[in-house]
Amino acid sequence: MAGKDSIISGMAGRYATALFELALENKAVDAVKKDLEAFDAMVEGSADLNRLVRSPVFGADEQLKALSAILDKAKIKGLAANFLRVITANRRLFAAREMIRGYRALVARHKGEVSAQITVAEKLSDKNLAALKSALKSVTGGKDIDLDVKVDPTIIGGLVAKVGSRMVDSSLRTKLNAIKFAMKEAR
Image (cartoon, rainbow, N blue to C red):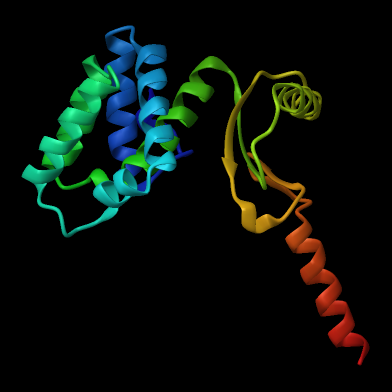
């Protein structure tokens, strides 16, 4: 079923697809998604953990030992923990976040949701998050939205929204670059 899906590809896509199919068989799709999102948030929030995940300097044994301690402390168990350990042993931990994005996309497709990647300059309040979800829902014909929100202060303000193949960039950085370009052209 998911193997025919073209929404993800490459090595990360193959791992995500295998995990999704295994989670589907074990009726653990939502539990795995929750655990993977918790791990993804931990990686995003910690420079040290990000370095452990991405750096080729650490050996598989070192990564596995550290990862096991982190998973135990975060209470991430079962299929998600086993998956993270397997990709670590296979020296693929550097692609974990891409695999998690692929898994989320597969879950969204399975549930009939639309996946949306949103980049904002600062964390959104619950009220603004709900308004954004509502606006995206109206644009997608009433489909449920699975939001993947990233905070990137370099966009200065506004937001960048990507839903499927459509992208809207209303970031202040882009607007300032457009003004800068227009001013250079006017010379």
